[in-house]
Image 1 (tube, rainbow, N blue to C red):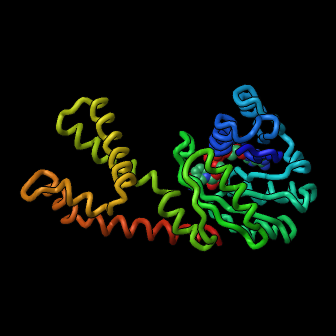
Image 2: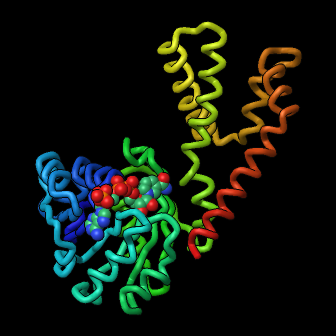
Image 3: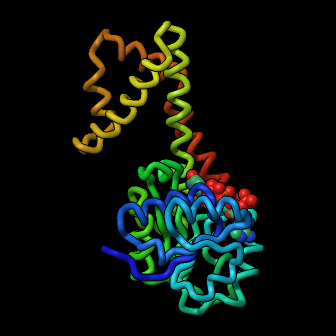
Length: 269
Ligand SMILES: NC(=O)c1ccc[n+]([C@@H]2O[C@H](COP(=O)([O-])OP(=O)(O)OC[C@H]3O[C@@H](n4cnc5c(N)ncnc54)[C@H](OP(=O)(O)O)[C@@H]3O)[C@@H](O)[C@H]2O)c1
């Protein structure tokens, strides 16, 4: 499937680059259809050279866009929306990847009845392995969700949720990569203590995380069932899991995600 719409990305940061890179590399969108804007001309010049997209330091280029992707940091959003409001066409689809900004706020800042789709991506999108959830605002329709899904699918998995579920998604997959890195920090610190060479340990640990995820995905089995399969009575895994249980690690993880969800709700206000 090839997208013919003209897309403007406002904010040419890491996330915007990842998405554009995926769109162009996969042949989903011709670079001539994409305009990236930013306040940093040198950053834009790099992106023009790398992907062949058009660039501008003027957000008013949205006036010809069929789709606008808002990819600035949440704290820059109010100023950006205020700036584009007078020139944005009524029929333009607005896709926001900014964390914690409800579609209602975006609709209101753009003067009311706007088609807005909100996305919660995660950082593995930078290597085409993202997990994104998308949610429609009040005026966005099925076609809007479909086009957003197609764009985000260029950098990984995309699922649809209700907007009120985005705080839970933020806690699960938005912040999720950090939990995996936290686990890896512990695994690698232990490997170091046990005298393993750093590079060897890194390769083994990374493949273990990747392989375990793949095993769970391919078999469709539950996490606890797969864990039981590698835990023989009186063995090494059992010793490790007993230690984790004694420290209350599973409950701490549950509490951690609930804390992230709570914070996401607070930040959206
Ligand atoms: N769930 C997640 O893990 C996740 C991950 C990444 C991103 N996100 C969301 O994605 C969005 C982008 O994140 P990012 O990491 O790509 O941010 P980023 O690298 O900071 O990119 C934003 C870019 O927008 C530029 N900018 C600032 N004000 C602007 C304006 N008025 N007009 C045009 N451009 C402007 C910034 O320039 P300066 O640097 O000079 O200000 C920067 O180059 C954020 O809203 C974030 O919440 C979510």
